[in-house]
Image (cartoon, rainbow, N blue to C red):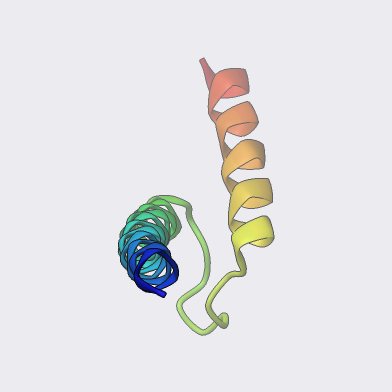
Length: 69
């Protein structure tokens, strides 16, 4: 029926819009982690840090900098 097709179209459009928003959110999050990885000190030969390792290292680095002050 027409109402079922309309609902399906609306749901597909909403899903597409939600997917675009989620993709944008994830891209922003990945960019933020990349920027944070560039700020924390580490050896060049080390592999790329995971998100959790990046957060842990950043937290430890902040604590270290606070102690210096």
